[in-house]
Length: 193
Image (tube, rainbow, N blue to C red):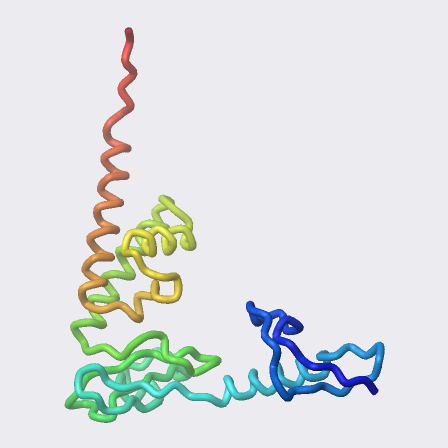
């Protein structure tokens, strides 16, 4: 066995080399130093992520959100029996909820009341009109919106948008569609010298 002081430069996910004091690894010569450690760390972190539930709080009344079947809110009008929602624990007096992803049960955004939910639906329709009419691909439409609203990629999800950002999205999308339609109507004028 060989004693090896560990430095962070050995780990590819740290950017700056630093010596870790009083930390030594014992390994046999010729053995891959970190293969077993990496495999076990990855499997543990994946299990923790699956087990971890999101803790949401209602932005209106500050009560915690509770994961419930969609039938709890929609009743007999529930179209998808496998759908779940994060519902404010003050429901129905506080009408705030958000959908959950089917596989991971993570929230699709932030909890919203009926006004914000309706505004998010309008924003989605306006954004979808761009790529469904063939002006851009769906992916490039989201990149375009990200640049127009000066947002990071992880923040460019309509399920996370505030009322203001929804209005801005609708405005940007309608302006873009209008400008594209005007270009179609006015033929290019060729100047003859």
